[in-house]
Image 1 (cartoon, one colour):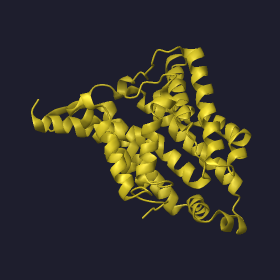
Image 2: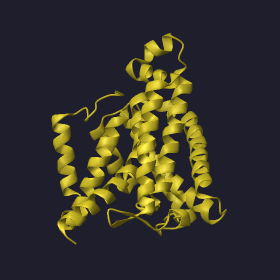
Image 3: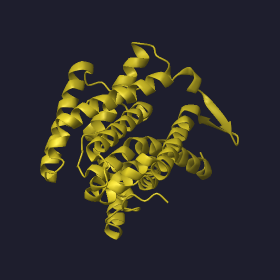
Length: 292
């Protein structure tokens, strides 16, 4: 393989991986920016989405698209129950209480996954319609990876438009900027919090299911991938839509390059890059919620 082919391989694989990270992490970014809660258990919803999609495709033989929608809806519904029963009590608490709660949820979710599915990693069976490859410029690219890239870009554009052009997007921006003022003009922030939390959890579940081909689902999923989810959020900027997209691309492509070019160093260069970015811009690349 020559250098041009190697570069294309890194860019393609890294972009597909980046889009999985983005779909999972952008919900965490907006949730943390709006609710102000350190929800480290976000990866547990992604893990739940992966396992649920495996069940819907394998045991119930649902079509892939329908199974993906059902996965998002079911996990969103469960997340609302958890948000109303547990998270609502720590919104005004310190970060220590929030971290303890979310870590507890991670351990409970991981233990349940271990008990039900065992320790063996699982991946989603790619449907035949998305199998095979596509010839582009004389080179074959896996169709499913192209599908992942398309899903990530569509999610980015959809969120950008919805937050910029819809009434609920205006309410989200207002609440992020000044919650007290938003409440004073009649915005029901409690309901808005539940909606955003459910939507973020649904995105995590869909991302976990879509990306199970690249990030296998296992009981240790929430903890093993937590650092990457937090890197996307912190480097992109808390509460942003565009920030995590740029950060996910940097992380995905950089991680793929490290694994291919210098596997002996692992993620060393990734963490160095994260430290460098945050030293220069502690608020992240895009700061707070900015939809231009």
